[in-house]
Image (cartoon, rainbow, N blue to C red):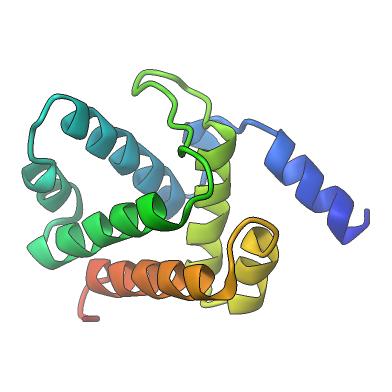
Length: 140
């Protein structure tokens, strides 16, 4: 398959959240939780801290969510919490988390270049890297 065909398949598939890599699935579910908390005017931080075991990772994930809110060109499509499938935006977030986990900036830029400018990609990639570093044991 060609790279563009692979991208189209990746972005048009709605994967099951349970089939995503662990880091990506947790990021998607945490984003859904943050959206729910925002709608009900609740603080997501206690659950984020419990999810990742430390306040720094929780704070840095919240910065990822804020960065997405600032740079995403359209409203970010978030599936309901009980939905087993990831929305198209959530599937893209999962792929971005994978690229950031691998520290693969080229793949990250390839995934996001058509919808985000270079400054927005930089801000989001750095926010994801900082979150992943805080989440990993012994790496801050």
